[in-house]
Length: 320
Image (cartoon, rainbow, N blue to C red; front, side):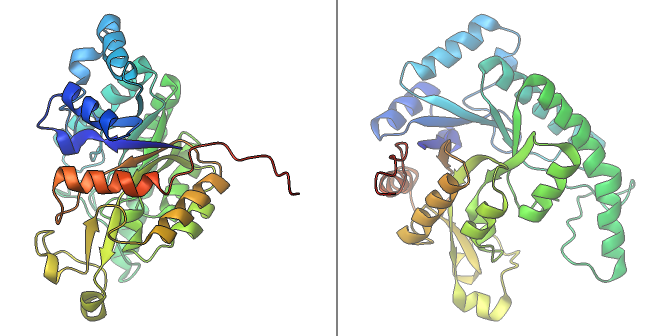
């Protein structure tokens, strides 16, 4: 397994200096944003698509440093009820898939998106409960009329390009847990998999080891990000929390750098479960810790994971 970083945390710096820094601290892979919420500071499809010489030079610049590109990330909402917004995200998605094919990057990381509650909706509507019956009606309409038709076509687009789609299971979108991920995979095919990010699952009460085993064979990429669960606030208000991320003392949970939400045993168990179920690709750090600086938060995550990752192939069982 390789150690990677989603480079958006250094979006204010030029790519070359970012790459040099990551090599210096022992990173082996980079995940690059290509638009939508991750931005495209380090990888602009418009400057590369259909330009073989530029694509070759871009990739060589990274590989000459001993790095690989683990994935391209274009997290947006192509199911947004505002057709103009949806079309913008859809274009970014298709440009990213095409660029991944040209760069020979195997995975595109993204969100499933979330529709509204009807054709006349203005905003997405994320359904979180089955009752009153209106919510079940909305959910059925979303999946049957919007989610499955869109991703069946968009998924085939990725298949034709030879690229896998790794969905981050993120609350606020229709794919937010392992069950909904596999529902979409069943409807579309194995091109759909998870960009497994435990930070969004921890606060939902999902056990990483159990869910990784449940998703065996359906994990295409992995984000290394942690979550601190504030049991004082959870005891009063539960885990659903709409307060701004800046209100740290009042929130039920907060994103943390790896090791500051859960201990080393938890992360060792995650690594072991990944290897046990056949995932041996990249663990890509996504640093969104409001209590740490960019450099210190990243360096602590790198140091922590270096001691946790299994980077060599298992030995023959000489004892068995």
